Amino acid sequence: MREIIRAIRVTLVLWGITAIVYPLILLAIGQIAFNSQANGSLITKQGVVVGSSLIGQNFTSEKYFLSRPSTTNYSTFPDYAPTKADNLSQKTGVSGATNLAPSNSDLLKRGNEKDGFQGVQVEFERIERAGIQPTADLVYTSGSSLDPHISIKSARAQVQRIAKVRSLNPNQVEMLISQNTDGRFLGIFGEPGVNVLKLNLALGGL
Image 1 (spheres, helix red, strand yellow):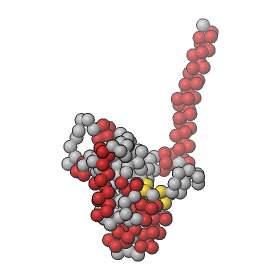
Image 2 (tube, helix red, strand yellow):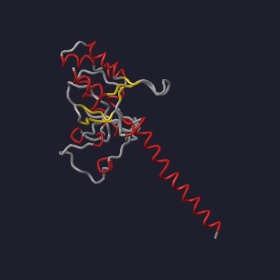
Image 3 (cartoon, helix red, strand yellow):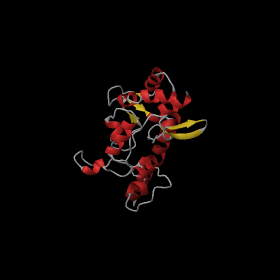
Image 4 (cartoon, one colour):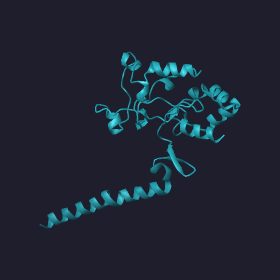
């Protein structure tokens, strides 16, 4: 009986440490030292949340930089998009790529423009009509399909179009790209990327 009581005490102590104390400590550290990151890295404009720096958004106006296409339409669906029972991404907001190989013909005709799921060929033609040199990340989705970044090359490919539509000096637009470029993680991992939401907000601020 004495051993049983001791075992129960140890279990309760460990449960208190791992299930209550430890999570509360991490919560406090997150809210104090990393408040923005712990709350979703939200971006506000005039006190209104306009998005997250971690989640991409779809921009269609010619006055803004195009973001990377998404198979999940960034988990937002317009009223005209019909609900489909077999569409798990629409029903649950699940993110992820199509997992279709470049040799798969379905990759070219993926979805349709009305539902927001444009195929590679449609994206390619749309980008060319906008006078932009197509790049890989403006045509293909990312692994998560929620990537908020595009490459510096893809951003610079859109400079002339943005400058012309907004009657800006291309150097102004280039400067905004530099200001909204995130470097490599820890200085060595990955490649620099341009956060499209931050860039377009800065562009709108002009």
